[in-house]
Structures are given as C-alpha cells and as structure tokens.
Length: 101
Length: 177
Image 1: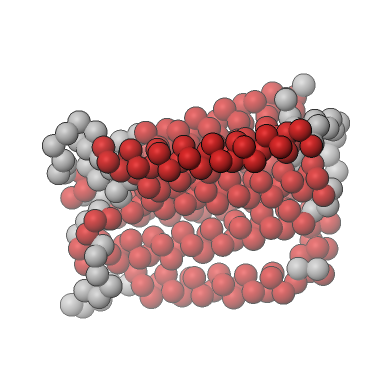
Image 2: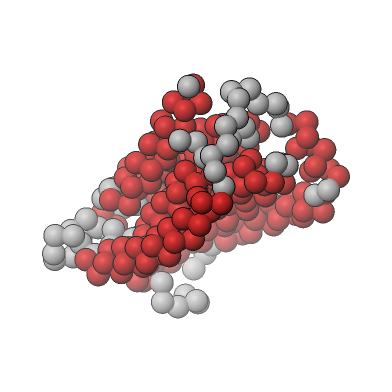
C-alpha cells in the first residue's frame, strides 16, 4: 500500500486538481489556491523520491525551498490582489485587462 | 499498521480537501478545505519520515499562507458575492462558468492520462519497499546540509523573503488618487 507509486498517484491527482482549479475559477484568490495545490504536489514528489530512490535528504531541502518560495509568492500575489481590488473594486479575473490604471 | 492508518487517512484528507476546493462555491469554504488538504500533506510527509518538513509545512502553510488568503478574501469579498451569470453553473459569483469548467476538466484529464502512462512504468521498475515504523530524526542532518552544501540557496532565500516582504508592503499600501 505504501510504495513510491502510491505517493506519485496522490501527487498526480493533487496536481491535476490544482490545474483544474487554476483553469476553471474566475476569482484571483481561488487561482492562488490552485497554485498552492500544484506547488504542494511538486514538493510531495521530491520527498517521496528522496525516501524511496535516492536515500539521502536532498529532496527534503528542495521541499523546504519550495515552501519558502510559496510563502513569498503568496505574500506578493495577495498584495497584488489587494491593490487590484483598490483600483477595480472587484477580483474577477476578466477585469484584469491592463497593466496601468 | 500505524503508518498504514496514517497514510490512508492523510491521503483521504488530502484528496477530498483538494476536490472540495475545486467544487465548492464559497471562496471562504475553499480556503478552509485547502487547510484540510495541506494538513493531509503534512501527514504524508510524516509517513515518509520527513519530520522537519512536516512541521514546517504546518507552520508555514497553516499558520501563514492560509491565514493570508483568508485576510485577502475578507478584504476583497463584497461586491463579488453578487452574481452576474444566467445559467446554473455560473450562478455562484465569480466561481467560473460552464465553459471554464469544461476547459479546465479537459486539460486536467489529458494531463492525468499522460502522467498515468508515465507512472505505470515507474510502478514496474520500483517494487514496493517496506520500512520499519521507526524513523531517525532528520533535523540534525538537514541543518548540516543547509549550512554546508546548500548555503548559497539558503542565503539567497533570505534575500528573496526580504524582497517579497518589502515588495508586498510597497504594492499593497494605500495611496492617494
């Protein structure tokens, strides 16, 4: 039951669901939620390979850096969302059509 | 046996939380379901023997990122809860409509089938290995790796976090029109 393949399948399902969230939602915050799911799927793959294939801890390091980058990305992304809301008074993705206000 | 139980529960929590993020209509509920999914991933890390990564996952995601998301939803929700669609799927406000769900599900399905093809070869080449229930602590080795082999990436990530902090404060500050 617990093998490399089961972790890969869970990670694949997570990635696919995150992709569907990113493509189908219209709210910018919901798209950021999908990005978090995709990043977590990638990090889970790194740790699973590090356990079952390489037997060292380099995958854990990769996973930690992915978490750091996800935190930075979420902070900047949500700042952009809040600024976008100040300008447009909505967070609908179809309203994001120009770079300057 | 304990590990099998933890693995099953974590996988169930992860996948059901992610599916609930996809199908729920309320964005605040989506944030809470993402929380469940991330806690499930932390459980999966625990079954892989990655104790430090699991704790970091809970601290950073549950304590930081999801709280930020909820703040952003609360600061920007409002007018978006007014529906602008006519058909049934688009009835919930700004949550996608029939066409976006169709395109999203089709692209995801193609990606899923492509990767199932790739994983099927990995299943044949890596038979199931069994590990005991006891894991050695990885914190000591991770600390050595971070300040010896990966010290450049470690220092660069501190610069990246500082830049993200200053950039986020710059972008989101209120300004006079």
